[in-house]
Amino acid sequence: RRSWAEPYKIKVVEPLRTTTREEREAAIADAGYNTFLLPSKDVYIDLLTDSGTNAMSDRQWAGMMLGDEAYAGSGNYYRLEDTIRRFYGYRHVVPTHQGRGAENLLSQSLISPGHHVPGNMYFTTTRFHQEKAGATFHDIIVDEAHDPTLDAPFKGNVDLAKLAALIDEVGAERIPYVCVAATVNMAGGQPISMANMRAVRELTQRHGIAIYLDATRAVENALFIREREEGYGSTSLADILLEFCSYSDGCTMSGKKDPLTNIGGWLATNDEALFEEARNLVVVYEGLHTYGGMAGRDMEAMAIGITESVELAYMKSRVGQVRYLGELLDQWGIPFVRPVGGHGIFLDARGFYPHLDQEQFPAQTLAAQLYLEAGVRAMERGIVSAGRDAATGENHHPSLELVRLTIPRRVYTQAHMDVVAESVKACYDDREAARGLRMTYEPKYLRFFQARFEPL
Ligand code: F0G
Image 1 (cartoon, rainbow, N blue to C red):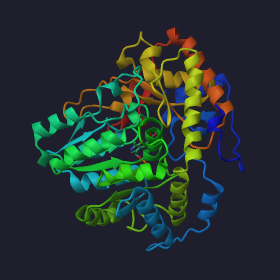
Image 2 (cartoon, rainbow, N blue to C red):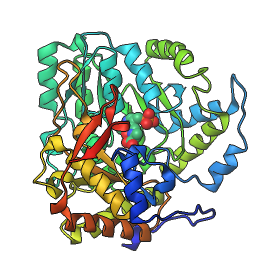
Image 3 (cartoon, protein in one colour):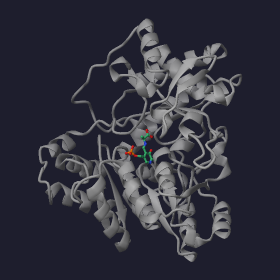
Image 4 (cartoon, rainbow, N blue to C red):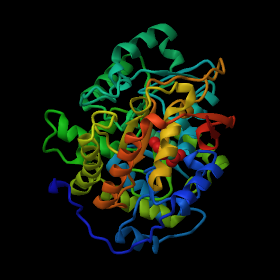
């Protein structure tokens, strides 16, 4: 248990505010039973996301003072570019304000109407940009990923047979690239193995298809490879990361996760033509190609954050804290996705509420209940997040109907995890009382962010 003790101590603290049950009832009703619409002042422990919620180190804060806020050619950009080349291994870097900015550049540059993009499960913004650029998305993750109860080491793996079948069906020339995510967020932060990544490379290379990695949590993925894959037990995370990335042609990146910052991202590529196109497009959507929407100081903090993210003791404590929460929940038989992934615990809302139909939004209901119980904010990752089919307009019905307790990096303590676990247990004990929700407002794009609901 102690093996994951934090390799740092606390220097600055931020007060938390607690609320009464009455205050929370008013707040969640005002928010349309959508935790995205709660003001953070009404939240006690905020597990909405691990995105941009990281605590920076003293070195990163010191780096902020070295911000070179020049419009063009900021020194911090060159430092970031060097750092990305060194740790991720790609030749060219285009900075963006965050991950979806990079997804927009990649999708616009490589996808034409009629194209098909396979991915190891979808991510909301990633699939959105692919479809907006005219592609049809195909889920090629292994079947095991869709079963929350199944315990397997690499549930993020690509199913090579599914990929091969798609190539046969639509033709390699209509697949601009395969999108591989490591770890797989929507599957519960599940990793993909080095062997699988290598095999995807071999298969796609034969057909001349590129691979773009969603490297958002690739360092967390590297820890799983070290722990679970033969031959990597004493390899450094930095070496694992480099090898993993070497089987791809580039990546999109949300700098708000692994790189331990609050904002930022990038597109990286080894492809000269894509680099040329994306470096041109970035000035339209993000900013000049030497800042891409980030301040100089943000780029400096990210460069430093990348070097901290590959430190083994840090990554063990990061994932160790998530596992600690999982162990607590396990004692009480609470249903969540097995095995515990990298960035959070994904509660199985179907397991909580077998009496609710998926159209009654079980996961949305559970996220609202958890907030009501203790002011803990989580996020729906089920039918609301999955949205509608771009062609038919029908609701997608994902097999996973989950509530994500996402752990921000270096932010909360073990006692906070205890509070979270007890709050989840209270919701579980009260599970039969849940009645579900009705959607009263549905935005056109990425509806989960702003949709509103009322109790049934
Ligand atoms: N890819 C993955 C796997 C992500 O988890 C995210 C963001 C993105 C891309 C988009 O990056 O937010 O910087 O534009 N995930 C956040 C989350 C929002 O809460 O899971 P972004």
